Length: 139
Image (cartoon, rainbow, N blue to C red; front, side):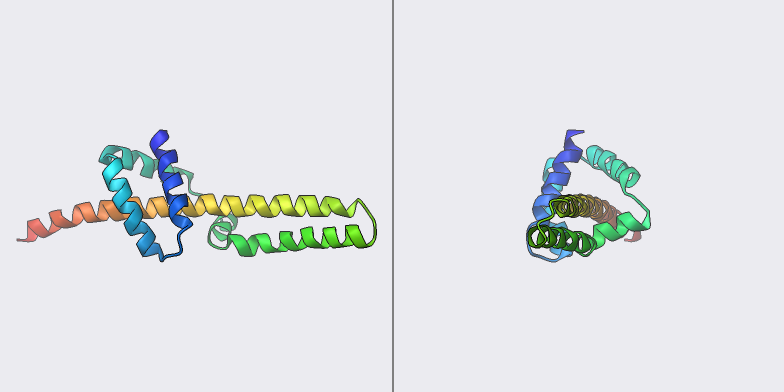
């Protein structure tokens, strides 16, 4: 699914910008509206809804990825400190594993946040496309 991957990459690109979520959704909405058909948008949305995790840990990593990874960065730093100061190479295992886990958690949170942004944008597009229809019915 090329559109799915492309939309996730566009969302990751928007995440690098320092702006509000509403502004990110607005910018992403314009890009998606121009490049992806309505049928493909619906397919991507159903795929995202099926893939989004619902457990507590995944939601915590999505919303607070840096906070979750912080203890592992601390373990990596302490392993480096103790490995150098006590001259014990075994402590470098803590450095390597702590760094690996911290990087993994931050990447996972980044991907989950990008997926959530695409999902919110697709829902916004769907809501805006329905809105004019409801106004014309009341008139």
